Length: 130
Length: 140
Length: 240
Image 1 (spheres, helix red, strand yellow):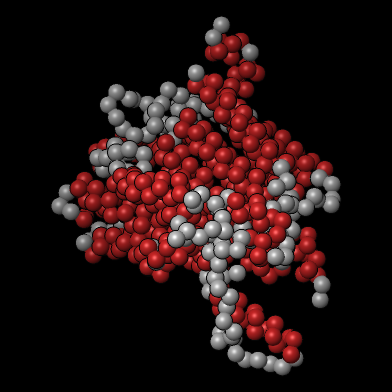
Image 2 (cartoon, one colour; image 1 turned 90 degrees about the vertical axis):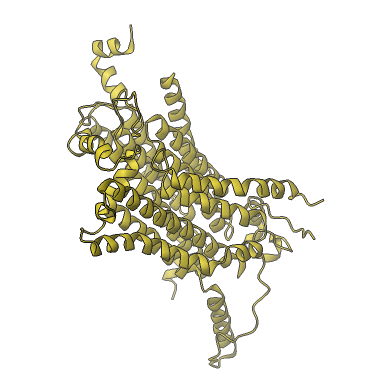
């Protein structure tokens, strides 16, 4: 039995095959989220934000995929193309993401220079002292 | 023997090809995956590689930070300037069709100039960001 | 075959992300982020988006890793073990994840040609672009021509971010001399107004090839210095 016949017989399998991309993206998203909220080190928080950001890009690209399609570059012999609009949006988002990461890292550098530490709890404590 | 001799030789061989590849990606963005952003980042990666393998002072002598900042601004100005030129020629802002006698040729020219502006700006900004980090480390 | 590649890629991607969450050294986490970017670029290629894969590989595995390592070169390599238990973040994350999974059940199946994302504007771009613009790469024509305003705004964002980094990190020489003059004021109790013409700054050391090695910096960087110094090929040797 091929995969599509199995999917017709068992609807649960059809749902899984049609949505596993989204679920993997959610796992990655939640991992990035966990790193941001549970780690104290500022550079690790930025790394967590990066993981989250990249998983959102993967989500958008999965939305644009078309079965049996090819990359959106017109050529002879190909009729079905995948979505070019999602590629354009994510192209923009990737470069903006690296720009904001750079600004975040430069702020981390200055915070370290001012406080001497990179742990968020220590910085809070130093701030509360008169 | 200096243990960095192998990376130095390899970098001297590879960096010109990386720069050439950046130009290829920039100008073939119409026919294959590519365009301004990718080309800018690859160009910046070549300069960053040069800085990592050779000394920062040498890299800053080859690619001056002040010049790079100005070039970044010029890239953005090129993009916005194309829009202003189309305004003067009677079209809307960034309506490339009025740039030439034929709308399709106008689109080609417009896309070429705009992607060039984007590529130049992205390359220059990535290089300046890297230089800002490295100069800060140097001053410590 | 494609299914096998997809399953392998996804497994490696999830494994890398979970390892980044669990590992304690920041240097290891930065390297794993580079690998994560490369794997996600490969998956984007499988999903028919070569432009995006190109950019993600160049930006994520290239520039982002270098910038994070430069930021890491200032600080310790280990993160401190968290004092508070991590049950609450885990619960929050699991709850949010389950709500999101419940939400995705309404989304169309992957690859459905009748999905709303493939209607309205996209067929117009795919049909009209060869007539109006005449270039094969539809992504470039949409990016530069149909959505030219967005690209202009985005280039401005990149330029502004670069300006922001230069303003935050640039002028380091002046700030350091100002700080030194402030410290002198605290010690002596008198007000000194000279700032920019203070004592000469120490010889700027090349952070990538320092003459004296990382240990000369002293203080907390001694333990993390080796971890941060190795990645940039630092060696305290001069060649003629």
